[in-house]
Image 1: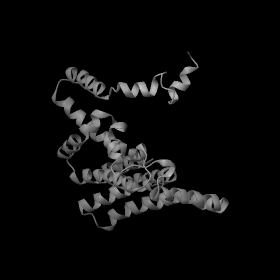
Image 2: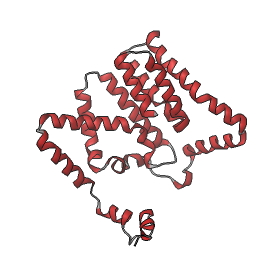
Image 3: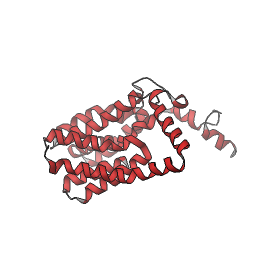
Image 4: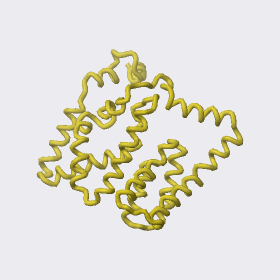
Length: 239
């Protein structure tokens, strides 16, 4: 839903059709119900865009405000219901969510740069190292720099937010994965545009496969000789 809210916002900027304002709010409301406050991410990018474009007049500010009201209308009824029907359980749930900021829940801790270390885990060795060149190329090729700054601001906000929380987990920052994939895809598209398709596709496949091939990880996850992983436990009954 976070990705859908960002996509809807980009559709609104491209088409300027009012229906997208409502769609953004619906997806944000659903994102809040699933991911809580991180569901509001698109409004941060929207704000950066308006500031960069210096669009401070009411006709521009009204759109995100309407989307926010729609998001509240989607997300708030559930909050009211759980606190009226299950007040103790709801309060405990909120308390548990807050603990993620103050203490490592279930032992999920790590240093402040934890999520940067996990870039290779999420996106693969190759793309993690190509991410910085891809970000630079995307900015240089983009026609609307203010929009790029808003997209980059959302990614930076996600990494900053989860770097400051006490609880760490690899996929926390994946809510901005859509933006990272778009940047990487744009770089691949640029590479394909300057060299022959017939030559480039096999090179990209081989290059990606080579740098993502990790024999030790494959053995640890899938070998029957390793007893402490799920795969071997499931497979041992098939010997």
